Length: 90
Image (cartoon, rainbow, N blue to C red; front, side, top):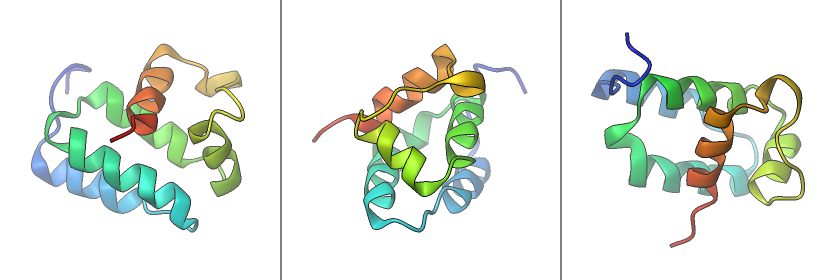
């Protein structure tokens, strides 16, 4: 699959399922993200989302609330772009 190819509905559903978190605060950000952007997610965005979902709940929440910025192997342009989409307000 090309990096800029859109995910099909099944792949979006799998990513959404795997993105469920233990902290309700994280889930609120994630649910809003999928409601707004799920229909047009690319493979690159899905990979960035997966990297974020590999973080602990507290580390993810720190990123979502801008208490920290992405560092190390997740400090990529794609991860930063997905973080901005996750942080969007209503």
